[in-house]
View 1 (spheres, rainbow, N blue to C red):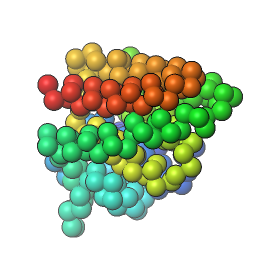
View 2 (cartoon, rainbow, N blue to C red; view 1 turned 135 degrees about the vertical axis):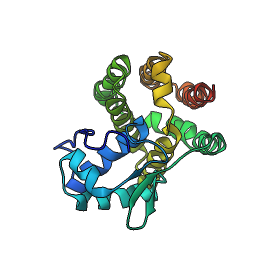
View 3 (cartoon, rainbow, N blue to C red; view 1 turned 90 degrees about the horizontal axis):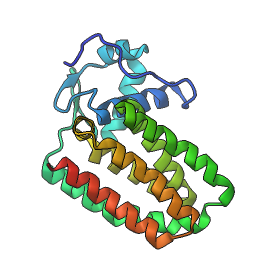
View 4 (cartoon, rainbow, N blue to C red; view 1 turned 90 degrees about the vertical axis):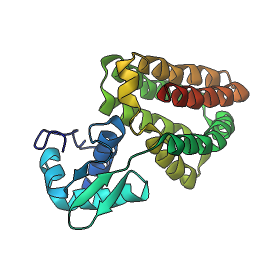
Length: 221
């Protein structure tokens, strides 16, 4: 196991119930590579690293099972899902079907008064990318995109997008940091907001399509 007793990601105090907070922290750790694909993690050990009991860890991990991020190993713990190139291609293909048109559709419904707030959600993505802070990056990215798609009013869309984006990122971010390319992806969030502010729905859709293809292409190298 990676770093047996090393502290993991912080459990934010303002992010819902203990189960919610632990789930978000573990999701960020998985997506960022802090928890390694294929490795087995017992709930008590994860609880010690998060500073919580094993009960909310188990509850949170079962939530992440439904997202496809971990699998249960009975009486042992949870194993982080390994994603093959074919898996990543398939998930990216589904994202292409959902996220670009969803982005286009929400553009008319985002009021101008909300633009500064969305900019404030995009800023931490760029900051985290610049510093190589993967845990903060994935959490800020998740919050931004769920806020954006929240204007659809479709909770099922939010659940699907959250799950697909997490699965797509498995194992890829560390490589982008090492190659100095994460910042490029991060800055596309501000470019997207500029298109939304201009009410360019077609441009926003096209950028989201390029963004998904761009990231998948980088990871395949």
